[in-house]
Image 1 (cartoon, one colour):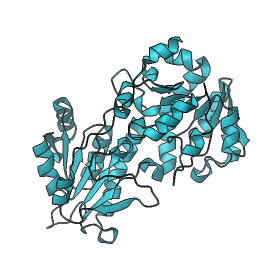
Image 2: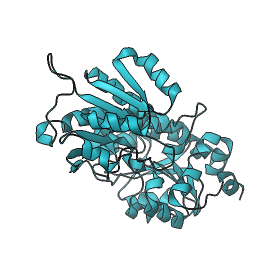
Image 3: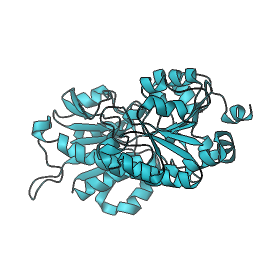
Length: 372
């Protein structure tokens, strides 16, 4: 199979779909790989490294899209990239379609086979291709939140861990999944007072057993969220419903009741965000103030640590890229039910029920389109 890796074009996005080591593995399996010039240069993977791994270097993204059977990316295709996709071409990347009807409609018109990293599952019910970036985003959320609490950033001027004789900041984390757990781990390491709120009692039990008395856990109710959010210095939204839009757990009234200069970090922003006051931002302009509260809502948080993120993502995606390349998309999806869960759009139809529900569209079972 001929696999293409274009350079990411989203604002301040430096990650790349395949690292040279992944290219070498694909070439070893008998596949061809073409990479847009400079695709990995910003994070230390120059064209020479890709050529040494066996890839061809093409000058423009249009050339990569034109010749490739499988496009491997990181972020959702931007409008100019959607325009270059064609029928029966396979796109493997993060999509986050539940909050992006325009992109979904563009992909449907293109006839592409769009497989989303974020809805591929595993035998334990996890999301193995979302997990690495959730780990990064969770850990980053605390360091960016701590920075935003600084006075010159618009914050109230609180040191996350306090000092002897001065109370530590109160950090509230909504969601105890991969991102929330990693956020809690870093926040506790910085000696903040940390509370995780989740609706799963088994998950709260696991967190309690993992972290003990260092971490405070609470069952999620409207009353609990309101009480804890209003009293917090930093609130991190780490809520995920696979494929679906994130629930708005924190209302504008709750945000209004927070002290001016406190901070919210919305990791869930890719899926629409879990704060009613959230709107997408970029690394170029990461924050804004709403109701006196600093909001950090960058949609590609892991892009700020692009080299770490790229290598972590490749470790997870490479086996699936190999499966698609070795067997073709039909056979790969037919034989692997977990990869099949990643199929979001196929030849003009939405094939993931949560995505279809979020967009108000009809869903076609992936098994049906595979049988055609």
